[in-house]
Amino acid sequence: MKATIGDQVLVESSTTGRARRCGEVVGLHHEDGTPPYDVRWTEDGHVSLLYPGPDTHIEHPRRLERT
Image 1 (cartoon, helix red, strand yellow):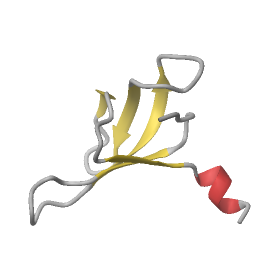
Image 2: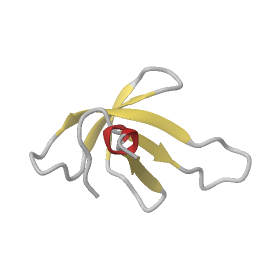
Image 3: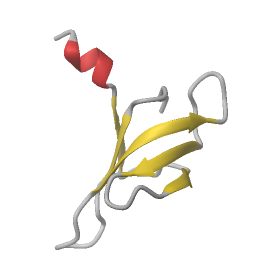
């Protein structure tokens, strides 16, 4: 998994009835874009360190705009 600053992070809930978490990558710890990432979460603006698991997806807004 690789990300760049500004990419969107979506973490699916592993529990039925709970919403997915959405955030924006605001910091990288490795030049090649591999984890972990600093993520600003949409629901409260809190920034935390994220080691993505199998339920995590990265969306690249700049790539989506070209299609």
